[in-house]
Amino acid sequence: VVQDRPAPRPAGIVGRLACAGTLGFRRAMALLDDSAVLRILGFNSEPRARLCCQSWDKHVTEALDLGRRISFNKRVRETGAMTYHHSAVRSMGGDFEECVAYQFEFHASGSFNAQWNRSFGQWSAANERQIGRWAVVRDMLRCETSEGPETEKGFVQYAPAG
Image 1 (tube, helix red, strand yellow):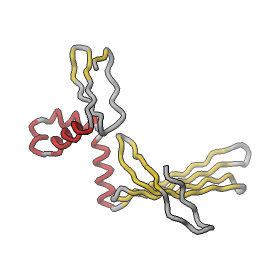
Image 2 (cartoon, rainbow, N blue to C red; image 1 turned 90 degrees about the vertical axis):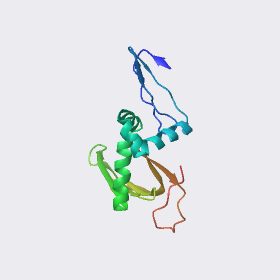
Image 3 (cartoon, rainbow, N blue to C red; image 1 turned 30 degrees about the vertical axis):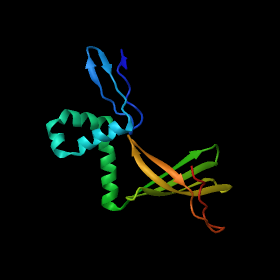
Image 4 (cartoon, rainbow, N blue to C red; image 1 turned 90 degrees about the horizontal axis):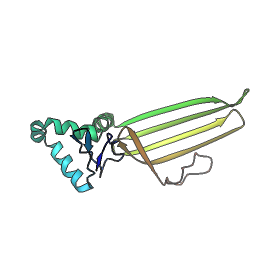
């Protein structure tokens, strides 16, 4: 595909590798299938091949955002697990506030546990647990939930898969 304007980088990782070349003021981009991407990544992981073609290595590393993926995976594997906590308060008018809290734990095995709670002052609250698998996709973490185990009444329940 040849375009007059610079082409946006593909959204996915597997199956889409931007092979951009400059043709005057035009830029060409090829979308490769999964098999081709796996061959290219195999080439990139061979240290001797990376040395002979550093510009290609740099291009593939940038096109697939491998720096973020490598950094996060390395940190999780070194520590065994990584936690992330986020909380926020939003005024709903007067003395009425919404409070939310999210707690994630990402394991080196590729699994995650999460729990969230949401409350509106003293009047109501909701909370839920989730489990599943995580993966680094470009500059984000993709979390796919799976079915949690049965829990007794009175304990925080698991969300349905999906």
